[in-house]
Image 1 (cartoon, one colour):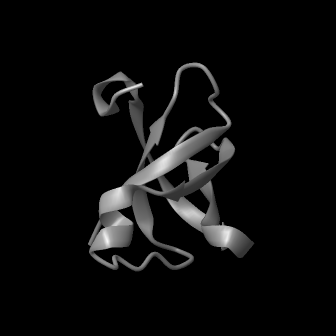
Image 2: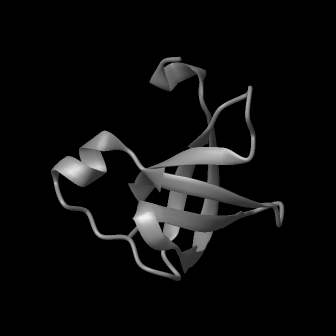
Amino acid sequence: MSREDLAMLDGSVVDAAAGGLYKVELENKVVIQAKLCGKMRRFNIRVVVGDKVTVGVSPYDPTHGLIMYRHK
């Protein structure tokens, strides 16, 4: 699955769980689990509760996603 196949959705981080997992509430009030994408880990981009983020969600499993971008 490539990056272009993911559906990009906006949301906000509501909880930071153990193991680098985050709970993200999307704009349509659905809460999914997400983890940081590789480039965010590489460049040490920090995500805290309350941040607005863009999440890439797979069409095969819409309950998990990758945090692709943290909005300023």
